[in-house]
Image (tube, rainbow, N blue to C red):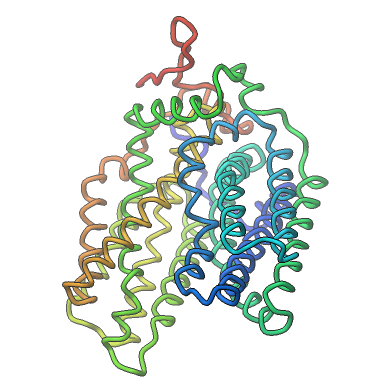
Length: 442
């Protein structure tokens, strides 16, 4: 039998946006991203004004993001233990309280950074819970297109956040921008509270409730996810080809500087963001699901191959065009979305999606740092070409995972795909002695 989930006709934006709960998730996520971008920009300016330290200003900008890795490693079990609506609303309210404290100006700069870092530890838990809701409200190919729309929202609202943040800083200053950010936190919380249906926690629904503390449970389930060959392959496929390309972004500024005074790194970075958004829109909307899966390895290869031309040190506009073509290859991840959803047990979806995001952030950070270090001894164009080559090599090594569906659904999983969210605890069996679940290869 064929795979019923992969219909001949891809879902449309109308299909996805017709789901009222997805509209709530989409709107609240966009508001969340704008608020976070404005907050970190305002905090960076505020810390610089109060300390005069460029280093502290830079730390202020990234403080909200760095703890994601720690939260993803040690707290992700909460995404499956707590009801999604309560968790997302609770995190928005904690963010609201945090921003209000920052806006009052009662804390010293070091205390501001510490507060933001502690709250950000729970960011990946909320994000994972939100992502894990999608297959419960979007079925079949609508789920894939919904993931694509959230990616588009992330890129677009970050750009909007920078624009709005810059405008607010000029009009009302950093404290005023923080008060307006508090309003976005409240608006997001209200949308989710009154727009989403209350659902019990996934662990409670599947009968796999808490056995240990969240810290130990997160480590245990992370190890189990990584021990499963299918899941591990899909995680590496989502982490490596795209993250290695991010190394090229890390040296966009020195590359543009080498081209002369008229060149701007902003043109390269905007082209990269535009290529990613267009690729996601075109592949998600106009490519049939079965063909999208077949194209997955070729789209991943597209990430690296155009970057090899940077050995020839192209001028600004050709370089921007190459960058846009390369980043369009990020759409390869759409071909992995259904496979990953089918591979992980329903009770661990929140943690599994959180592990994807945590690993991706860590890999991108390492790639950017490594590229920056190499640019000290090599020409930026060589480093960018090297990033493309590394991405292409990773794609070739992962070709069996990218090219062949990692999970062949059973009869029960096909029924789940037709009828709803699917999943259950497929492929994971209870361990003797009550030690939780263990992966089973099929």
